[in-house]
Length: 192
Image 1 (cartoon, rainbow, N blue to C red):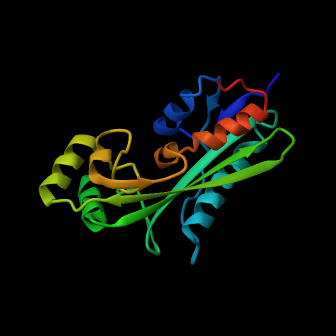
Image 2: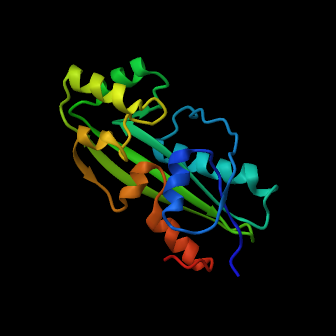
Image 3: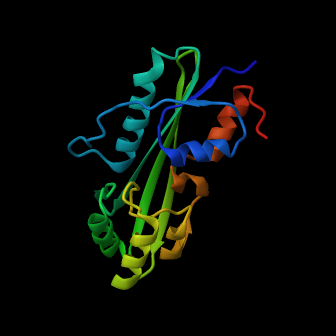
């Protein structure tokens, strides 16, 4: 029998992604400080935050597989953040117009024996050149204030792109399901 699965998040996006695999799980947020450390790379930040979520919950859920994920995005060396408001989303999309943004999604799994594994998915998204009117219409429609990059790929945000390069398209949504499914099969889950 496989161990119970816990997804370390309260994100409706990540919960919806894991539900695609049709397996039982519970979700629990892990309250952590997500402030980047001085000089921290986007990959190191995503990895540290995913592992911090696991470590925060491990003592409370020692018999669970704990799945955590974190995503960072970078425009060159600049780490991007969730905009938090329509105005900041509009400003961020103006900055990203015509640019390629690298999204790094770290998926981490802690086994009940305390072994932890991590996996990084890299997704390059090229945003087409956008007009101010297109940006305003998009932000008004999708309200992408709680997503890094100021777009929702699972919604109308895909219309902002000219290209996406990835080995796992779900990683752009915040949880790499290809690696997750592999780990779950190793743990005894029937996927599919």
